Length: 130
Image 1: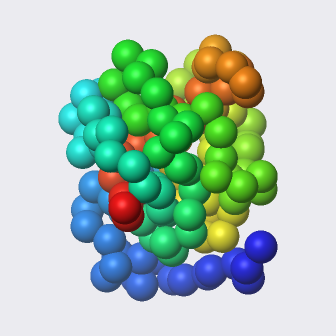
Image 2 (image 1 turned 90 degrees about the horizontal axis):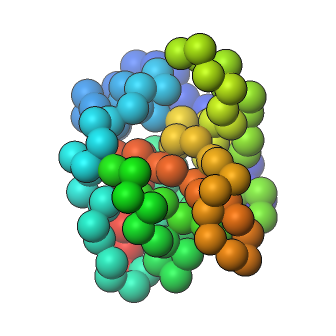
């Protein structure tokens, strides 16, 4: 694991567009079925939009029908951190980029084998490279 990336809010605002900033730095959620990667199926790797840390491989992406890109595994254990989220009257598990602490989305235990996990991720938090 590489060293944590820490920037000021001003630096993040300069680097990211408004929607990317709201999602990754303020834990907002993009509207369902609106993201660039919802129906994206090319082979490659999905990286954190903030720090370019590889997060998910296309081989683990699946159509969950939820409106956001879904993956059943991290590209490598520990690149995504899990945090309790009790906002909006729900008990969920938020996922963040371990390297820069960017909010990515949430993880649920209703995904396919072999992990049974569904990482439900905002498209604007990702950058795809083939």
